[in-house]
Image (cartoon, rainbow, N blue to C red; front, side, top):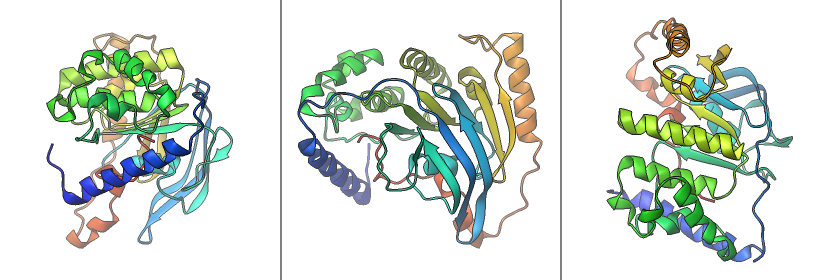
Length: 303
């Protein structure tokens, strides 16, 4: 994987920060208690360069619930996820995770992990070392256990460059799960995978979620993926919640089943109902939802 100098420098800085944190941790630190936490979003507003991209968004997610957010590109869905993750600050309203503020830079008791479309593995570290980033030395054995859970026990000593796209995302998932997250934020994590690998990864994420019980928030443009995985599907249009639909389908779900196809068609029709926006002047590109296409490297996805 070719990396730009700024990306490599950011990853080096991340690795150094994780090493400092590891050195400061008590040797006998135990993993956090498993299970999901509640998420509450209250009248959240977010602006970029004076343009409001989220308008008084209100949302509740129960502990252990799997929520999918769908919508057109630039509607604000990835921005909302970044606010929940604490990567950016809201301009109004409040977000709480397990009763604590999700404000940018605030330390939280609940463990929140983010999985992006780009796995962003450290290319100079082997697979097992990527998964173990940020763990105290006394817990390094857990990295191998989680690798086995995602089906990559035999790839522990491989270099990331030798993995397929689907395998790299499995490593990214293992890196998140090894910290026993109580809230897992998934920002288009499977968007770059081929169709068959994508379905395979969806099944893996669902099985691990059902077994481990964490709360999951998935941002996706794939309505079929949302129907396959979520307890509820929320549609965001122009920064507002336009639909909140509970998925009343038994698990595991079969894409060929009549109920699945019917719900998928209904949600897709609702998503497509919004007419495409008028042509945007070229100078307005800076006002688009920046989180829909990029994500900073200085995040706690492996911390």
